[in-house]
Length: 258
Image (cartoon, rainbow, N blue to C red; front, side, top):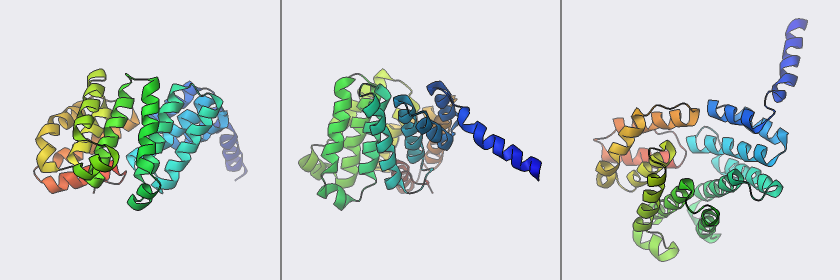
């Protein structure tokens, strides 16, 4: 009994020392050890540490591997804000701030989101990131995803009238992102799911080849592997347009596909 207690004591105090650098934290994220990465990122107390902690939590939100998506989105935003306070020029902090802000808006009820004017605020933050990195494919994809999300919620006419969202802008932004980062698993999957959520019957033929490419790609990171699995499940449902559309919506909302 005493031996077991001593071993547990040693492990508890040794664990935080495992990740001493941002590189160590990146290894944890690659392996999918998000809770540990967040704990150690905060313990580092550096801009990079907080940014990587935010990335880990954002990955869990994106994959639907954490409960209370709205409150956790706010936590991810706070972590990114801490990183920016320490280093306002840090690329990863700026990216995570824009991403987490999008998650907060996405997980807010439609009425509250409209009342607080969240969609334009999120777009402004994405565009601020893009102003600093105009050719960054992830920034382009984030803005493209914003357009598709607005149209999914409101339809084309209201989306254009209320917020200036359009399918043409989404296609242009995503097209440039995909040109700059060909076969990027995350960008391509979000592109495909964003369109499928607007209509499996209409956009299925357009994006099925993209999902097939994603499902066949070799991956070496936990997030990519999980996204690949989800893409495969959606592919398996092709032939049932309504089911494919529903699965795409659940993917975008961070929910289990079935």
